[in-house]
Image 1 (cartoon, rainbow, N blue to C red):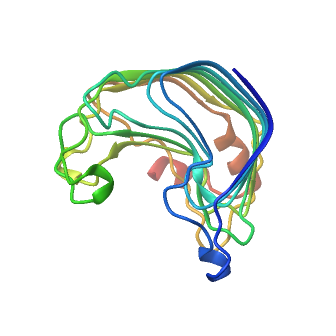
Image 2 (image 1 turned 90 degrees about the vertical axis):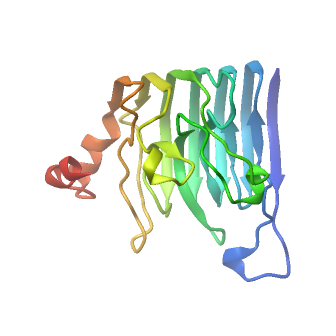
Length: 228
């Protein structure tokens, strides 16, 4: 399927500028999908700009602009007891914070490896986690950040229960953030996030080319990188 020059707007008109978004309003999501191309997509809102969810294969994003929102996400993965594989994702992105709050930018997130009790309505107050699968052959290139709160991140401990940290069954294979990444982080809240990965399903072949550029730009030192 091919989508070109589309937009999504989930903003409210009678709220303060920073909070003028509508909850649970993703821009473009994929699930149980294969061979999807999105070219020329612009999103304004407060939730996921684009989310590639379980069993998404051959997803190509080009000229995607996110005005506010949470992130460009691979995930959530492994939230349910099912195969959560995602493969062959490539994109060309502009992530920017205007009057809307943009939190994470590029974010890969998976749940813990066991069923974890949840107390939030989005999980219907039911235990979540314990799925399986792999995220493979993902390339994030030509990504530009403008006043985004956080640099790219990977988190395999979603579920908010620290006692289950490191139990993820999700494997990450051949993920790359290229050197063409441009960062302009929000100065007061910027956070550098390196992978928080599982000991059960070790990941391989990360290429964090952007980290070298951040060191060169003075955003983070080599010593800081080693401590995180």
